[in-house]
Image 1: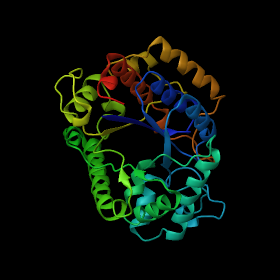
Image 2: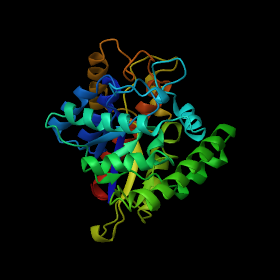
Image 3: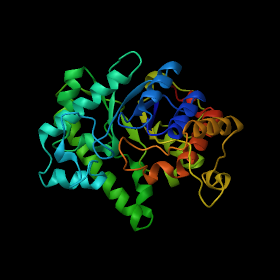
Image 4: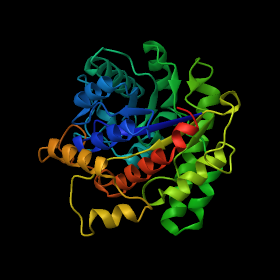
Length: 333
């Protein structure tokens, strides 16, 4: 069985449009929302209206915190926004993050999710922006808050053999693989020593996504990784659902609201697929709804380059292509 989870809902209208389009064409089963994102309330409303299950994308690294009580140790020195992907980890390793601040912010984000949700539902699961939720010293706090709110499912991003693909590249790719290996080690430890003992179960048996996103997201590669992981050489072979492992694929599809030098078609086609007319219409509506805002988390830190990359649209195109091919419906949703 396949669980396809789109991260970063609520970041911007363009990002949300890509996620909702992928769900509409059968290429997405779940999404997670950044509650300190600029469009989080609207995204939750739209997701609820179409039946897209949404979890909390816990964010401890980007934008402004949501806690009204203040969480000074989570902020960059002299700033009002959080420390960033690596700054957070450096502060955690140095012992400069307050456990009380972590608890306040994590609890605040769950509470905000509930207040923004049209039916005031708790998150159906929790995952972490940039995987901070599995780190030593953070996972313990996350688990306490999850138990408090009755959230019983968490993403556990443990390394899969797909990662070997990354290590054959340049120095940046090797560094990225090393980062993911560290995340995987922390995830394994947190699963065994924190989440399972607390009665919190992982969202899937296998986690994919480290090497099939952005520039690495092509139709051929994603098809190959999924078919190999699910145990089939061909994507359309019949199978017994009972015999299938549950696999979670992390994706980041979205429409890009900002122009770049190369044309959209050139950038999307470089991923081995092109946006259909339906996706083009969805893109135009999403960008129109942005009303000049490029998105970003609450505050004035501005949008991350990751969210503005044409690689987000490439993921939309690749996921839609595989959905039209029948891959996702064949493997079960």
